[in-house]
Amino acid sequence: MVLSLDLRRYRNIVVLTGAGISVASGVRPFRGPNGIWNEWDIERCATRTALEQSPQLVWQTFGPLRKQLQTTQPNAAHRALARFEQSLNKHQRFTLITQNIDGLHQIAGTRNLVEFHGSLRQSRCSDDTCEQSSFVDQRAHTETLPTCPTCGKPLRPDIVLFEESIPAWAEAHAKRSLRECDFFLAVGTSGTVFPAAAFARTAQMLGARTMLVNLEPHSEADSAFEEQQIGRAEELLPTLLGVA
Ligand SMILES: [Zn+2]
Image (tube, rainbow, N blue to C red; front, side):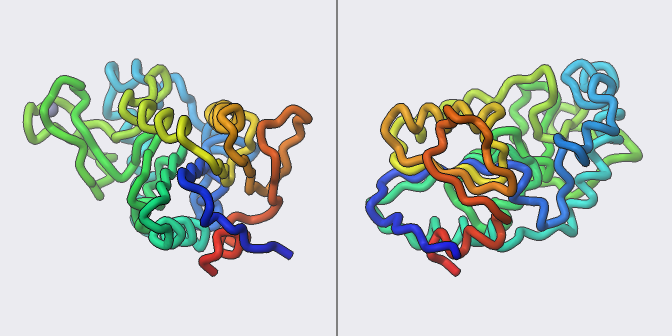
């Protein structure tokens, strides 16, 4: 049986989510045995070079995924995190960092959100110096190459491609929240790959309580996670966070 955690004494709660939290919403993971990357030629369709040489190919790759997302809804885990954030008192800070590009935390209503790898629901200009800011875009753009309403250059999905770095603001925001974190929770991520492992380690070194909620237990003896709850996030989180 899962018991509710008493999190009222924590001042800076940081949650990191990975692909596992969206499985119950029908979002296929990119990595792992059933991952999308097993079927795609990453070099050809999901890199910075591909975007520069053939932006249409990038849209033909990510456009159909964007189309699927139009009918994808947040599940009980996304909603529990949003309700939890709303339930905190004015002395508590909450930051949700997600590795997912499905935009489901935003739809669920999470407010202090860092989409570490961007959002597939948004488009932006392929020219980083253009003044056009990222915007919500429902269109899949698989047929014709969309152009920037400001400068006319190709648009791109607002996600971090291979060969690209995490946006500086996202990295800074994540690091700042980790420095002050006293409770760190990772959900739906193996806990051994970047950035989950590094984030947990940083939080632990700075004295935070660290917990993993995942379908698979972490296997490393020196894991930075002091506690783990094994199971489905959508079943565990509402009770753990006391918002069932
Ligand atoms: Zn532009």
